[in-house]
Image (cartoon, rainbow, N blue to C red; front, top):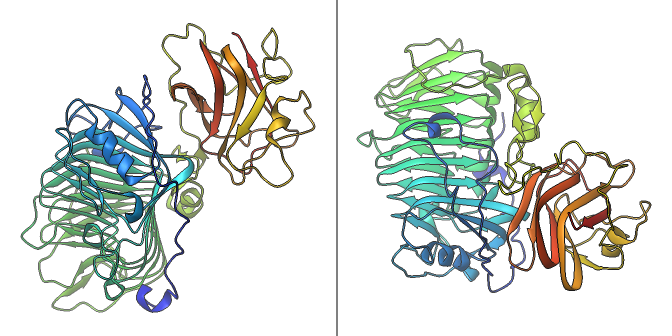
Length: 518
């Protein structure tokens, strides 16, 4: 059995270098919702769509995130905020406005609705800075990392919670995110994912929660039982002392999660709570299900779970473990549809899908990770080419406008060049420094482009996962989807066009970024 987090972890996670001091917010005329759609209880009570249908902006600082919230017409005007870089205390300040209520020491979503925050490009890291949702509804948080948020020591943020929700919160979907700490309460940390004071209809999916004394809670005390209707699926809980989660009252559904090294206790159902626990894989852990540290009992319905090297304590006055042979003692009716992976493949499925910067891959219920459905094409494009099924030997007709143009992009891998994507030579290529990045073609004067062809180098075909095509002049998203090849959109006059790789199965190798008039 592994020792508790506070004793095992040797040092705090390193702090990434600061992003640019000022965050640039680019207004975009059309918005796309976060990839995929909400699942679990977040689909109930009218559903959770975040900022879908609204404006899309880009932010590289916490202040820019707050500025985007405050720049809306009203507190309910839909908005998608694409975040790239490291967000921390040094670049996050309070911003005032009629459509926001922000703070300097956290990302504050207070008394607002219809918001998506999604990490893009090289990733979004909220370093020692928590996300606080209060008196708000219809919130989507996707593809972000939140780490080392403290309630004591310096700096402090959000009461020590990576993501915290409280006070009449409704419909929140957190997806493909990584929430992590560097120890327990004695090191200054609290929960990774907390819900209290009437928070309902929440889903946490395809996420990683690790290296914390407390995974999270639903209800702050035995009397705070107005929370619930929470789904946890395809998440990895790793090296957590307890609260995976702690459930006080309410109903929660846990399915297809992988729990590794729950050091003291896991799912703690108490104070009348009901937990439906389906097809999870519990490994190298202790007391993974039951009522612990109280005589106020909760209940559970179990099926299809695997308990691999799980130990159980003896029952006591304040200790009622469900094992060693967990049996159901309640029934829970689930109002939404869902597909269960077999518990035996949960470790591999979760490993291939959960966490930030994993290409937003999901499970199809058949133990096979897959890329999300591409965003619908621009409705003004009458006949867009399917980017997932190109024929690289049959490019669009006409002149390749990239030949003779310029090129630049995000950090490139050693030995590669931006110019290799517009030299007409399939034997040369550009690669990003990691698995994601962006490459641009540019001209000295406005040029009309209506179609591009992204050609991967030999041997790397199929590496590119999710992407966006952006008009660099205005920030407008021209197309998005998955897979390299031919991508069509409404012709637009611009001086620079960017292909952003937001997910990949390895290091992409882009041999040619061809551009055509239409």
